[in-house]
Image (cartoon, rainbow, N blue to C red; front, side, top):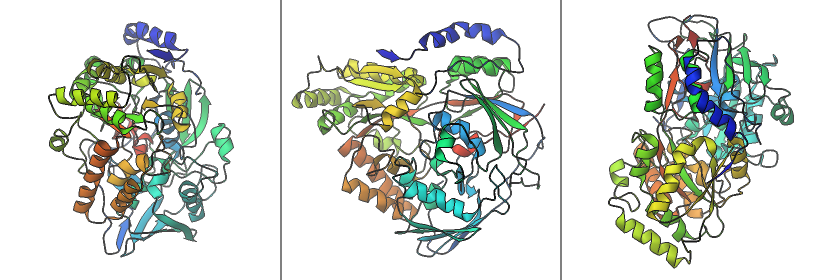
Length: 568
Protein backbone atom coordinates (compact mmCIF):
# COMPACT_ATOMS: atom_id res chain seq x y z
CA UNK A 1 0.00 0.00 0.00
CA UNK A 2 1.32 3.43 -0.95
CA UNK A 3 0.40 6.49 1.06
CA UNK A 4 0.87 9.81 -0.66
CA UNK A 5 0.66 12.17 2.30
CA UNK A 6 3.48 14.14 3.91
CA UNK A 7 1.36 14.45 7.01
CA UNK A 8 1.15 10.82 8.07
CA UNK A 9 3.37 11.65 11.03
CA UNK A 10 0.97 14.37 12.13
CA UNK A 11 -2.01 12.03 11.97
CA UNK A 12 -0.07 9.40 13.89
CA UNK A 13 0.76 11.98 16.53
CA UNK A 14 -2.92 12.86 16.89
CA UNK A 15 -3.78 9.23 17.48
CA UNK A 16 -1.04 8.92 20.08
CA UNK A 17 -2.19 12.06 21.86
CA UNK A 18 -5.88 11.20 21.72
CA UNK A 19 -6.07 9.84 25.30
CA UNK A 20 -4.34 13.00 26.55
CA UNK A 21 -6.76 15.26 24.70
CA UNK A 22 -9.70 13.31 26.05
CA UNK A 23 -8.52 14.04 29.56
CA UNK A 24 -8.25 17.78 29.01
CA UNK A 25 -10.82 20.22 30.31
CA UNK A 26 -12.93 22.57 28.16
CA UNK A 27 -11.25 25.37 26.31
CA UNK A 28 -12.71 28.51 24.82
CA UNK A 29 -10.68 28.16 21.63
CA UNK A 30 -9.94 24.69 20.28
CA UNK A 31 -6.54 24.03 18.82
CA UNK A 32 -7.04 23.14 15.18
CA UNK A 33 -5.09 20.18 13.92
CA UNK A 34 -2.73 21.16 11.08
CA UNK A 35 -3.85 20.09 7.62
CA UNK A 36 -1.89 20.22 4.36
CA UNK A 37 -2.78 22.91 1.84
CA UNK A 38 -5.29 21.65 -0.70
CA UNK A 39 -3.37 20.46 -3.81
CA UNK A 40 -40.14 11.65 -0.42
CA UNK A 41 -39.70 12.58 -4.17
CA UNK A 42 -42.41 14.86 -5.54
CA UNK A 43 -43.95 14.00 -8.87
CA UNK A 44 -45.19 16.96 -10.92
CA UNK A 45 -48.94 17.11 -11.08
CA UNK A 46 -50.71 17.14 -14.42
CA UNK A 47 -52.67 20.17 -13.22
CA UNK A 48 -51.22 23.56 -12.27
CA UNK A 49 -49.38 23.39 -8.97
CA UNK A 50 -48.58 26.23 -6.61
CA UNK A 51 -46.15 26.13 -3.71
CA UNK A 52 -46.36 28.90 -1.17
CA UNK A 53 -43.73 29.87 1.35
CA UNK A 54 -44.38 29.03 4.97
CA UNK A 55 -42.43 30.59 7.83
CA UNK A 56 -39.47 28.48 8.88
CA UNK A 57 -40.85 26.14 11.52
CA UNK A 58 -39.53 26.15 15.06
CA UNK A 59 -40.07 23.16 17.33
CA UNK A 60 -42.49 22.96 20.22
CA UNK A 61 -40.98 23.06 23.70
CA UNK A 62 -37.90 25.18 24.51
CA UNK A 63 -37.92 28.37 22.52
CA UNK A 64 -34.97 29.79 20.59
CA UNK A 65 -32.43 32.04 22.23
CA UNK A 66 -30.38 34.63 20.43
CA UNK A 67 -26.64 34.97 20.70
CA UNK A 68 -23.58 32.79 20.97
CA UNK A 69 -21.27 31.18 18.46
CA UNK A 70 -21.44 27.51 17.47
CA UNK A 71 -18.06 25.87 16.99
CA UNK A 72 -17.96 23.08 14.45
CA UNK A 73 -15.41 21.10 12.47
CA UNK A 74 -14.18 21.17 8.91
CA UNK A 75 -11.96 18.32 7.78
CA UNK A 76 -9.46 20.37 5.79
CA UNK A 77 -8.86 23.12 3.28
CA UNK A 78 -11.60 23.24 0.61
CA UNK A 79 -10.65 21.99 -2.83
CA UNK A 80 -12.53 24.99 -4.27
CA UNK A 81 -14.89 27.74 -3.12
CA UNK A 82 -16.84 27.61 -6.38
CA UNK A 83 -19.41 25.20 -5.01
CA UNK A 84 -21.23 25.07 -8.31
CA UNK A 85 -18.29 23.01 -9.53
CA UNK A 86 -17.83 20.95 -6.35
CA UNK A 87 -20.42 21.35 -3.55
CA UNK A 88 -19.24 18.47 -1.40
CA UNK A 89 -16.81 17.74 1.40
CA UNK A 90 -14.95 20.64 2.94
CA UNK A 91 -15.99 23.00 0.15
CA UNK A 92 -19.61 22.54 1.20
CA UNK A 93 -18.97 23.01 4.92
CA UNK A 94 -17.05 26.21 4.18
CA UNK A 95 -19.60 27.80 1.84
CA UNK A 96 -23.08 26.49 2.67
CA UNK A 97 -23.69 28.72 5.74
CA UNK A 98 -23.42 31.66 3.31
CA UNK A 99 -25.63 30.16 0.57
CA UNK A 100 -29.22 29.92 -0.64
CA UNK A 101 -30.97 27.89 -3.33
CA UNK A 102 -33.88 28.89 -5.52
CA UNK A 103 -35.71 25.95 -3.90
CA UNK A 104 -34.30 24.07 -0.94
CA UNK A 105 -34.48 20.31 -0.64
CA UNK A 106 -33.80 19.46 3.00
CA UNK A 107 -33.99 15.70 3.45
CA UNK A 108 -33.14 15.90 7.17
CA UNK A 109 -35.76 18.60 7.72
CA UNK A 110 -38.96 19.47 5.91
CA UNK A 111 -37.99 18.29 2.45
CA UNK A 112 -38.67 20.41 -0.63
CA UNK A 113 -39.66 23.95 0.21
CA UNK A 114 -39.11 27.63 -0.43
CA UNK A 115 -35.76 29.32 -0.14
CA UNK A 116 -35.08 32.29 -2.43
CA UNK A 117 -38.33 31.44 -4.20
CA UNK A 118 -41.27 31.96 -1.86
CA UNK A 119 -43.76 30.30 -4.24
CA UNK A 120 -43.99 28.68 -7.65
CA UNK A 121 -46.46 27.35 -10.19
CA UNK A 122 -46.15 24.51 -12.71
CA UNK A 123 -48.03 24.49 -16.00
CA UNK A 124 -50.45 21.66 -16.82
CA UNK A 125 -47.99 20.10 -19.27
CA UNK A 126 -45.20 20.10 -16.66
CA UNK A 127 -42.87 22.14 -18.87
CA UNK A 128 -43.12 25.70 -17.52
CA UNK A 129 -42.08 26.54 -13.95
CA UNK A 130 -42.64 30.08 -12.65
CA UNK A 131 -41.02 31.20 -9.39
CA UNK A 132 -41.84 34.28 -7.28
CA UNK A 133 -38.81 35.43 -5.30
CA UNK A 134 -38.96 36.42 -1.64
CA UNK A 135 -38.91 40.21 -1.22
CA UNK A 136 -36.03 42.20 0.22
CA UNK A 137 -33.32 39.59 -0.35
CA UNK A 138 -29.84 41.07 -0.51
CA UNK A 139 -26.39 39.78 -1.26
CA UNK A 140 -23.94 40.21 1.57
CA UNK A 141 -22.56 43.41 -0.02
CA UNK A 142 -26.02 44.99 0.22
CA UNK A 143 -26.88 44.59 -3.46
CA UNK A 144 -30.51 43.50 -4.00
CA UNK A 145 -30.85 39.94 -5.26
CA UNK A 146 -32.99 39.94 -8.42
CA UNK A 147 -34.41 37.44 -10.86
CA UNK A 148 -31.64 38.30 -13.30
CA UNK A 149 -29.13 36.92 -10.78
CA UNK A 150 -30.99 33.60 -10.67
CA UNK A 151 -31.01 33.49 -14.47
CA UNK A 152 -27.25 34.12 -14.56
CA UNK A 153 -26.62 31.27 -12.12
CA UNK A 154 -28.87 28.70 -13.79
CA UNK A 155 -27.56 29.53 -17.25
CA UNK A 156 -24.00 29.22 -15.97
CA UNK A 157 -24.71 25.78 -14.55
CA UNK A 158 -26.91 24.43 -17.34
CA UNK A 159 -25.30 25.84 -20.47
CA UNK A 160 -21.97 27.61 -19.99
CA UNK A 161 -19.54 24.81 -20.73
CA UNK A 162 -16.78 27.26 -21.63
CA UNK A 163 -16.70 29.30 -18.42
CA UNK A 164 -17.59 26.30 -16.27
CA UNK A 165 -16.95 22.98 -18.02
CA UNK A 166 -17.45 20.97 -14.82
CA UNK A 167 -20.71 22.18 -13.32
CA UNK A 168 -21.39 19.58 -10.62
CA UNK A 169 -25.19 19.60 -10.96
CA UNK A 170 -25.47 20.22 -14.73
CA UNK A 171 -27.16 16.84 -15.22
CA UNK A 172 -29.91 17.94 -12.82
CA UNK A 173 -30.88 20.57 -15.38
CA UNK A 174 -30.54 18.36 -18.47
CA UNK A 175 -34.12 19.03 -19.63
CA UNK A 176 -33.99 22.80 -19.12
CA UNK A 177 -34.54 24.69 -22.39
CA UNK A 178 -34.43 28.28 -21.17
CA UNK A 179 -34.36 30.46 -18.06
CA UNK A 180 -35.67 34.02 -18.11
CA UNK A 181 -36.46 36.89 -15.79
CA UNK A 182 -40.11 37.88 -16.22
CA UNK A 183 -39.44 40.83 -13.94
CA UNK A 184 -37.08 41.57 -11.04
CA UNK A 185 -38.99 39.20 -8.77
CA UNK A 186 -40.07 36.42 -11.13
CA UNK A 187 -38.10 33.62 -12.80
CA UNK A 188 -39.48 31.32 -15.49
CA UNK A 189 -37.88 27.98 -16.42
CA UNK A 190 -38.99 26.15 -19.57
CA UNK A 191 -38.07 22.51 -20.17
CA UNK A 192 -37.84 20.50 -23.38
CA UNK A 193 -40.27 17.94 -21.99
CA UNK A 194 -42.25 17.36 -18.82
CA UNK A 195 -40.05 16.89 -15.77
CA UNK A 196 -41.16 14.89 -12.79
CA UNK A 197 -38.15 15.88 -10.73
CA UNK A 198 -37.14 19.44 -11.62
CA UNK A 199 -38.39 21.04 -8.40
CA UNK A 200 -36.55 18.43 -6.32
CA UNK A 201 -33.47 18.83 -8.50
CA UNK A 202 -33.33 22.60 -8.02
CA UNK A 203 -32.36 21.79 -4.43
CA UNK A 204 -29.31 19.83 -5.55
CA UNK A 205 -26.14 20.86 -3.69
CA UNK A 206 -24.47 22.34 -6.76
CA UNK A 207 -27.40 24.64 -7.51
CA UNK A 208 -26.65 27.23 -4.85
CA UNK A 209 -26.83 30.83 -6.04
CA UNK A 210 -23.58 32.81 -6.30
CA UNK A 211 -23.43 36.61 -6.67
CA UNK A 212 -22.79 37.52 -10.34
CA UNK A 213 -20.92 40.65 -9.27
CA UNK A 214 -18.13 38.56 -7.73
CA UNK A 215 -15.53 37.34 -10.21
CA UNK A 216 -14.99 33.59 -10.00
CA UNK A 217 -11.23 34.16 -9.82
CA UNK A 218 -11.68 36.36 -6.74
CA UNK A 219 -13.94 33.78 -5.09
CA UNK A 220 -11.61 30.84 -5.51
CA UNK A 221 -8.64 32.99 -4.47
CA UNK A 222 -10.40 33.86 -1.17
CA UNK A 223 -10.43 37.54 -2.16
CA UNK A 224 -14.20 38.08 -2.16
CA UNK A 225 -16.42 35.49 -0.49
CA UNK A 226 -20.14 36.06 -0.09
CA UNK A 227 -23.64 34.85 -0.79
CA UNK A 228 -27.12 35.70 0.48
CA UNK A 229 -27.32 33.17 3.33
CA UNK A 230 -27.67 33.44 7.11
CA UNK A 231 -23.96 34.01 7.80
CA UNK A 232 -21.33 36.28 6.28
CA UNK A 233 -17.66 35.63 5.77
CA UNK A 234 -15.31 37.30 8.27
CA UNK A 235 -11.97 35.48 8.19
CA UNK A 236 -10.17 32.33 7.10
CA UNK A 237 -6.98 31.22 8.80
CA UNK A 238 -5.70 28.54 6.40
CA UNK A 239 -5.62 25.06 7.92
CA UNK A 240 -6.87 26.54 11.19
CA UNK A 241 -10.29 28.24 11.39
CA UNK A 242 -13.15 29.73 9.38
CA UNK A 243 -15.03 32.58 11.08
CA UNK A 244 -18.55 33.54 9.99
CA UNK A 245 -20.78 36.22 11.50
CA UNK A 246 -24.53 36.70 11.53
CA UNK A 247 -26.13 38.27 8.48
CA UNK A 248 -28.21 40.97 10.16
CA UNK A 249 -30.10 41.58 6.91
CA UNK A 250 -31.12 37.94 6.35
CA UNK A 251 -34.59 37.75 4.82
CA UNK A 252 -36.03 34.71 6.61
CA UNK A 253 -38.12 34.53 9.77
CA UNK A 254 -39.29 31.62 11.89
CA UNK A 255 -42.93 30.63 12.47
CA UNK A 256 -43.27 33.18 15.27
CA UNK A 257 -42.01 35.99 13.07
CA UNK A 258 -38.56 36.11 14.71
CA UNK A 259 -35.56 36.99 12.59
CA UNK A 260 -33.16 34.24 11.56
CA UNK A 261 -30.49 33.17 12.29
CA UNK A 262 -30.45 33.02 16.09
CA UNK A 263 -26.68 32.67 16.46
CA UNK A 264 -24.16 35.51 16.37
CA UNK A 265 -21.85 33.39 14.29
CA UNK A 266 -20.27 30.08 13.36
CA UNK A 267 -16.66 28.99 13.71
CA UNK A 268 -15.37 25.92 11.91
CA UNK A 269 -12.04 24.48 13.05
CA UNK A 270 -9.80 22.39 10.83
CA UNK A 271 -9.44 19.00 12.53
CA UNK A 272 -8.80 16.28 9.94
CA UNK A 273 -8.63 13.13 12.03
CA UNK A 274 -11.69 11.40 13.49
CA UNK A 275 -10.40 10.57 16.96
CA UNK A 276 -9.17 14.13 17.44
CA UNK A 277 -12.59 15.41 16.36
CA UNK A 278 -14.35 13.25 18.95
CA UNK A 279 -11.84 14.33 21.59
CA UNK A 280 -12.74 17.96 20.87
CA UNK A 281 -16.45 17.14 21.25
CA UNK A 282 -15.85 15.30 24.50
CA UNK A 283 -13.83 18.11 26.10
CA UNK A 284 -16.16 20.87 24.91
CA UNK A 285 -13.62 22.44 22.60
CA UNK A 286 -16.18 22.26 19.80
CA UNK A 287 -19.97 21.95 19.87
CA UNK A 288 -20.74 19.98 16.69
CA UNK A 289 -18.88 17.11 15.03
CA UNK A 290 -17.88 16.90 11.41
CA UNK A 291 -20.99 16.04 9.39
CA UNK A 292 -18.81 14.33 6.79
CA UNK A 293 -17.01 12.10 9.29
CA UNK A 294 -17.40 8.34 9.47
CA UNK A 295 -17.97 7.88 13.19
CA UNK A 296 -19.17 4.42 14.23
CA UNK A 297 -21.01 3.37 17.41
CA UNK A 298 -17.88 1.92 19.00
CA UNK A 299 -16.25 5.35 18.67
CA UNK A 300 -19.28 7.32 19.83
CA UNK A 301 -20.11 5.26 22.95
CA UNK A 302 -17.19 6.52 25.10
CA UNK A 303 -18.04 10.11 24.20
CA UNK A 304 -21.73 9.61 25.03
CA UNK A 305 -20.78 8.22 28.46
CA UNK A 306 -18.57 11.24 29.15
CA UNK A 307 -21.11 13.80 27.87
CA UNK A 308 -24.62 13.17 29.27
CA UNK A 309 -27.25 14.27 26.78
CA UNK A 310 -24.90 14.07 23.81
CA UNK A 311 -26.93 14.49 20.64
CA UNK A 312 -26.54 11.77 18.00
CA UNK A 313 -28.25 11.07 14.72
CA UNK A 314 -27.70 8.36 12.18
CA UNK A 315 -26.98 9.88 8.79
CA UNK A 316 -28.45 8.37 5.68
CA UNK A 317 -25.60 6.41 4.19
CA UNK A 318 -23.25 7.37 1.46
CA UNK A 319 -21.97 4.65 -0.76
CA UNK A 320 -18.66 3.03 -1.54
CA UNK A 321 -18.24 2.44 -5.25
CA UNK A 322 -15.43 1.29 -7.52
CA UNK A 323 -15.16 3.47 -10.63
CA UNK A 324 -13.52 2.21 -13.83
CA UNK A 325 -12.12 4.65 -16.33
CA UNK A 326 -13.14 4.19 -19.95
CA UNK A 327 -9.72 3.01 -21.10
CA UNK A 328 -7.72 -0.22 -21.31
CA UNK A 329 -7.83 -2.63 -19.66
CA UNK A 330 -11.00 -1.55 -17.88
CA UNK A 331 -12.87 -0.84 -21.10
CA UNK A 332 -13.32 -4.64 -21.19
CA UNK A 333 -16.69 -5.42 -19.61
CA UNK A 334 -15.48 -8.85 -18.51
CA UNK A 335 -12.98 -7.35 -16.06
CA UNK A 336 -15.40 -4.86 -14.55
CA UNK A 337 -18.13 -7.47 -14.19
CA UNK A 338 -15.66 -9.92 -12.64
CA UNK A 339 -14.85 -7.41 -9.89
CA UNK A 340 -18.58 -7.00 -9.27
CA UNK A 341 -19.05 -10.77 -9.04
CA UNK A 342 -16.14 -11.33 -6.65
CA UNK A 343 -17.00 -8.79 -3.95
CA UNK A 344 -18.31 -10.29 -0.70
CA UNK A 345 -20.27 -7.23 0.32
CA UNK A 346 -21.73 -8.69 3.51
CA UNK A 347 -18.28 -9.55 4.84
CA UNK A 348 -16.95 -6.14 3.84
CA UNK A 349 -19.80 -4.43 5.69
CA UNK A 350 -19.02 -6.34 8.88
CA UNK A 351 -15.38 -5.31 8.74
CA UNK A 352 -15.80 -1.68 7.72
CA UNK A 353 -19.21 -0.70 9.16
CA UNK A 354 -19.52 -2.99 12.19
CA UNK A 355 -22.27 -4.75 10.22
CA UNK A 356 -24.51 -1.68 10.33
CA UNK A 357 -24.23 -0.57 6.70
CA UNK A 358 -26.27 -1.64 3.68
CA UNK A 359 -24.37 -4.18 1.57
CA UNK A 360 -27.19 -4.35 -0.98
CA UNK A 361 -27.41 -0.61 -1.55
CA UNK A 362 -27.11 0.76 -5.10
CA UNK A 363 -27.62 4.45 -6.02
CA UNK A 364 -30.81 5.43 -4.24
CA UNK A 365 -30.08 5.51 -0.52
CA UNK A 366 -31.03 2.68 1.79
CA UNK A 367 -34.34 4.03 3.14
CA UNK A 368 -35.51 5.65 -0.10
CA UNK A 369 -38.82 4.58 -1.59
CA UNK A 370 -37.05 4.60 -4.97
CA UNK A 371 -34.50 1.90 -4.10
CA UNK A 372 -34.45 -1.63 -5.52
CA UNK A 373 -35.67 -3.88 -2.68
CA UNK A 374 -32.91 -5.57 -0.74
CA UNK A 375 -34.50 -8.99 -1.23
CA UNK A 376 -34.41 -8.48 -4.99
CA UNK A 377 -30.77 -7.35 -5.12
CA UNK A 378 -29.77 -10.32 -2.96
CA UNK A 379 -30.76 -12.67 -5.79
CA UNK A 380 -28.51 -11.04 -8.41
CA UNK A 381 -25.12 -12.51 -9.39
CA UNK A 382 -22.49 -10.78 -7.29
CA UNK A 383 -24.86 -10.40 -4.34
CA UNK A 384 -26.14 -13.94 -3.90
CA UNK A 385 -24.68 -16.40 -1.41
CA UNK A 386 -22.69 -18.55 -1.21
CA UNK A 387 -19.98 -16.77 -3.23
CA UNK A 388 -18.21 -19.81 -4.69
CA UNK A 389 -19.88 -19.83 -8.12
CA UNK A 390 -19.53 -16.07 -8.61
CA UNK A 391 -15.84 -16.06 -7.66
CA UNK A 392 -15.16 -18.98 -9.99
CA UNK A 393 -16.84 -17.11 -12.83
CA UNK A 394 -14.88 -13.93 -11.98
CA UNK A 395 -11.59 -15.81 -12.24
CA UNK A 396 -12.69 -17.34 -15.54
CA UNK A 397 -13.49 -13.90 -16.96
CA UNK A 398 -10.07 -12.51 -16.02
CA UNK A 399 -8.39 -15.51 -17.66
CA UNK A 400 -10.55 -15.19 -20.77
CA UNK A 401 -9.59 -11.50 -21.01
CA UNK A 402 -5.90 -12.45 -20.92
CA UNK A 403 -5.12 -10.90 -17.52
CA UNK A 404 -2.68 -12.76 -15.28
CA UNK A 405 -3.83 -12.17 -11.71
CA UNK A 406 -0.38 -13.12 -10.42
CA UNK A 407 1.27 -10.10 -12.03
CA UNK A 408 -1.61 -7.66 -12.49
CA UNK A 409 -1.34 -4.93 -9.80
CA UNK A 410 -3.30 -1.85 -10.95
CA UNK A 411 -3.01 1.41 -8.95
CA UNK A 412 -6.07 2.04 -6.78
CA UNK A 413 -6.21 5.66 -5.52
CA UNK A 414 -8.60 6.80 -2.78
CA UNK A 415 -8.92 9.70 -0.37
CA UNK A 416 -6.99 8.87 2.81
CA UNK A 417 -9.97 9.79 4.99
CA UNK A 418 -11.69 6.59 3.82
CA UNK A 419 -8.82 4.23 4.65
CA UNK A 420 -10.75 2.20 7.21
CA UNK A 421 -13.61 1.69 4.76
CA UNK A 422 -11.42 0.79 1.78
CA UNK A 423 -8.85 -1.62 3.24
CA UNK A 424 -11.48 -4.39 3.76
CA UNK A 425 -12.51 -4.01 0.10
CA UNK A 426 -8.93 -4.34 -1.14
CA UNK A 427 -8.30 -7.33 1.11
CA UNK A 428 -11.52 -9.03 0.05
CA UNK A 429 -10.68 -8.82 -3.66
CA UNK A 430 -7.20 -10.19 -2.96
CA UNK A 431 -8.44 -13.09 -0.83
CA UNK A 432 -11.36 -14.08 -3.04
CA UNK A 433 -10.46 -13.21 -6.61
CA UNK A 434 -6.69 -12.90 -6.25
CA UNK A 435 -6.80 -9.31 -7.57
CA UNK A 436 -3.95 -7.30 -6.01
CA UNK A 437 -5.01 -3.65 -6.10
CA UNK A 438 -2.18 -1.23 -5.30
CA UNK A 439 -3.92 0.94 -2.69
CA UNK A 440 -2.76 4.56 -2.84
CA UNK A 441 -4.03 6.84 -0.04
CA UNK A 442 -3.90 10.50 -1.01
CA UNK A 443 -5.09 13.84 0.31
CA UNK A 444 -8.79 14.45 -0.34
CA UNK A 445 -8.29 17.66 -2.33
CA UNK A 446 -5.64 15.99 -4.49
CA UNK A 447 -7.93 13.00 -4.99
CA UNK A 448 -10.73 15.33 -6.18
CA UNK A 449 -8.37 16.85 -8.76
CA UNK A 450 -7.28 13.39 -9.91
CA UNK A 451 -10.92 12.47 -10.48
CA UNK A 452 -11.80 15.66 -12.33
CA UNK A 453 -8.81 15.18 -14.67
CA UNK A 454 -9.63 11.47 -15.11
CA UNK A 455 -6.08 10.50 -14.22
CA UNK A 456 -6.87 7.02 -12.98
CA UNK A 457 -7.64 3.54 -14.26
CA UNK A 458 -9.69 2.19 -11.37
CA UNK A 459 -10.42 4.16 -8.19
CA UNK A 460 -12.61 4.14 -5.11
CA UNK A 461 -15.15 6.97 -5.16
CA UNK A 462 -17.05 7.24 -1.87
CA UNK A 463 -20.10 9.36 -2.37
CA UNK A 464 -23.62 10.06 -1.20
CA UNK A 465 -26.84 10.52 -3.17
CA UNK A 466 -27.42 14.27 -3.55
CA UNK A 467 -31.21 14.05 -3.20
CA UNK A 468 -33.96 11.53 -2.51
CA UNK A 469 -35.09 11.72 -6.13
CA UNK A 470 -34.30 8.89 -8.56
CA UNK A 471 -33.09 10.95 -11.51
CA UNK A 472 -30.87 13.08 -9.25
CA UNK A 473 -29.47 9.98 -7.55
CA UNK A 474 -28.44 8.28 -10.79
CA UNK A 475 -28.16 10.64 -13.77
CA UNK A 476 -25.24 12.87 -12.67
CA UNK A 477 -22.91 9.84 -12.63
CA UNK A 478 -23.93 8.24 -15.94
CA UNK A 479 -25.40 10.82 -18.31
CA UNK A 480 -23.09 11.52 -21.24
CA UNK A 481 -21.10 14.69 -20.66
CA UNK A 482 -22.09 15.11 -17.02
CA UNK A 483 -19.14 16.43 -14.96
CA UNK A 484 -19.85 13.76 -12.35
CA UNK A 485 -19.46 11.06 -15.04
CA UNK A 486 -15.80 11.10 -14.06
CA UNK A 487 -14.85 8.05 -16.15
CA UNK A 488 -16.30 9.38 -19.40
CA UNK A 489 -18.64 6.51 -20.18
CA UNK A 490 -21.37 7.05 -22.77
CA UNK A 491 -24.24 4.97 -24.07
CA UNK A 492 -27.33 6.34 -25.92
CA UNK A 493 -29.46 3.62 -24.33
CA UNK A 494 -28.53 4.78 -20.83
CA UNK A 495 -28.99 8.45 -21.72
CA UNK A 496 -32.46 7.86 -23.12
CA UNK A 497 -33.51 5.74 -20.15
CA UNK A 498 -32.45 8.51 -17.77
CA UNK A 499 -34.24 11.24 -19.73
CA UNK A 500 -37.37 9.08 -19.87
CA UNK A 501 -37.14 8.67 -16.10
CA UNK A 502 -37.04 12.44 -15.60
CA UNK A 503 -39.98 12.96 -17.94
CA UNK A 504 -42.18 10.39 -16.19
CA UNK A 505 -44.82 12.03 -13.98
CA UNK A 506 -46.48 8.90 -12.60
CA UNK A 507 -44.76 7.90 -9.34
CA UNK A 508 -45.23 4.15 -9.76
CA UNK A 509 -43.86 4.22 -13.31
CA UNK A 510 -40.93 6.34 -12.14
CA UNK A 511 -40.15 3.70 -9.53
CA UNK A 512 -40.24 0.91 -12.12
CA UNK A 513 -38.01 2.86 -14.51
CA UNK A 514 -35.55 3.77 -11.77
CA UNK A 515 -35.24 0.13 -10.65
CA UNK A 516 -34.75 -1.07 -14.23
CA UNK A 517 -31.98 1.49 -14.80
CA UNK A 518 -30.16 0.51 -11.63
CA UNK A 519 -30.22 -3.16 -12.60
CA UNK A 520 -28.99 -2.37 -16.11
CA UNK A 521 -26.09 -0.30 -14.76
CA UNK A 522 -24.97 -3.08 -12.42
CA UNK A 523 -25.55 -6.15 -14.56
CA UNK A 524 -25.01 -4.87 -18.12
CA UNK A 525 -22.57 -1.96 -17.81
CA UNK A 526 -20.56 -2.22 -14.57
CA UNK A 527 -18.96 1.19 -15.28
CA UNK A 528 -19.29 1.77 -11.56
CA UNK A 529 -19.51 -1.17 -9.17
CA UNK A 530 -21.41 -0.44 -5.93
CA UNK A 531 -19.83 -2.01 -2.86
CA UNK A 532 -22.56 -0.96 -0.44
CA UNK A 533 -23.69 1.95 1.69
CA UNK A 534 -21.60 2.93 4.67
CA UNK A 535 -22.87 3.94 8.09
CA UNK A 536 -22.04 7.10 10.01
CA UNK A 537 -23.30 9.10 12.97
CA UNK A 538 -23.64 12.86 13.52
CA UNK A 539 -22.83 14.14 17.04
CA UNK A 540 -23.31 17.41 18.90
CA UNK A 541 -23.14 18.62 22.48
CA UNK A 542 -26.36 18.93 24.51
CA UNK A 543 -26.29 22.75 24.62
CA UNK A 544 -26.76 22.86 20.84
CA UNK A 545 -30.49 23.01 20.10
CA UNK A 546 -32.58 22.38 16.98
CA UNK A 547 -29.62 20.94 15.14
CA UNK A 548 -30.80 18.52 12.47
CA UNK A 549 -27.62 18.45 10.44
CA UNK A 550 -27.48 16.77 7.08
CA UNK A 551 -29.36 13.61 6.28
CA UNK A 552 -26.35 12.66 4.17
CA UNK A 553 -23.18 14.26 2.93
CA UNK A 554 -24.79 16.22 0.11
CA UNK A 555 -27.70 17.61 2.14
CA UNK A 556 -26.52 21.21 1.93
CA UNK A 557 -29.26 22.92 3.94
CA UNK A 558 -28.20 21.09 7.09
CA UNK A 559 -24.81 22.79 6.93
CA UNK A 560 -26.26 26.32 7.19
CA UNK A 561 -26.99 26.43 10.96
CA UNK A 562 -29.96 28.60 9.98
CA UNK A 563 -32.24 27.53 12.85
CA UNK A 564 -29.70 26.43 15.49
CA UNK A 565 -29.39 28.09 18.89
CA UNK A 566 -27.37 27.57 22.06
CA UNK A 567 -28.84 26.80 25.46
CA UNK A 568 -26.08 28.32 27.57
